[in-house]
Length: 121
Image (cartoon, rainbow, N blue to C red):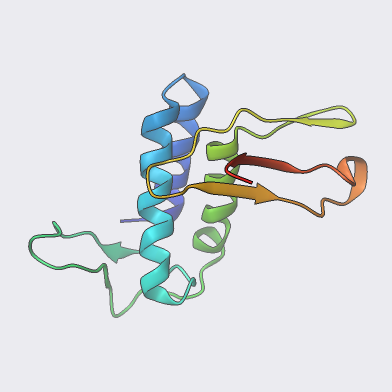
């Protein structure tokens, strides 16, 4: 599994109207990050869960790796459907099963003071 490739897949799914599928991809990669202390390696093995209950890092994978580090940011943008629109930020969140709420606060620049979120508050 390549985190950055999967973030592109999630973004494409979201762009073409498959928000729930994009959310599932995003959740799977973000869940895998919990096994790597939130520091995604460049690549890891994605065995079926009946075979191993955790992702397996390749011994030669770079960690951190710039493109893997950026993947969660694109995944969040895809889940929240963040789109800059002048001085405001459009959002149409679709949360994956397993994430009850999600919020982004503290934007700087033109979106200062904007809060984006979904789920229970």
